[in-house]
Amino acid sequence: MAGPTVAVAITKQQIWHGIQEQFDTVYYFDGPALQAGDANFERLVNALVVAEKKVFGKNVQFVTGRVWSAGGTAVQNVTKGLYTLSGVGAVEGQTTHGEAAVLVKIECERPNVLGRKVYLRKFLRVGQIFSAFQNNMAEGRQALDAQMIGFYRDYGETIRKVDIDPGVLFVLVSPTGRVPRLGTPATVSPFIISREYRRN
Image (cartoon, rainbow, N blue to C red):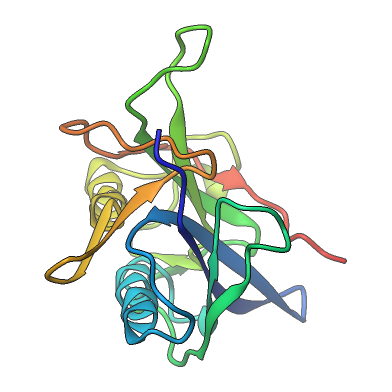
């Protein structure tokens, strides 16, 4: 397994219970060794923001994108780029509660030591969805129809590989270096997941 060479956090914010809460979506990639401040890092952040804005609601604001080296010790993993973001998500529909998340999973090539499948998971606190939830948006109940599942699956397929320029390819991996299984599409849980904000 190739370890991640770079990590990216896309920080967003939304109002929940009258408080502006910030949260991240974190990605790990195996990619070329680039120096801090390289323009390709900003291009990587921008590509991820484009993918995210398609699935996040208009009530979710994009704040910052941070890139850092990954796979080493805490001292070795230094910031490579910090970028100010703007704008909101593109989805305008039914508002979800602040800690409701859509779960997108991408199966990895190698199972764990018990032979069970291992997934890269993205919990998307999307803020709004196009179609109305069923059963009053209760956690653990059927919430997304087939059309909506396909919508979030497209996001999962987009983030597998980010091709910036010829010779500049970032491949999604787990923090420990597991890579997505080729030919196996991303899957989406039909259930809404409760994902609490991490607070200091």
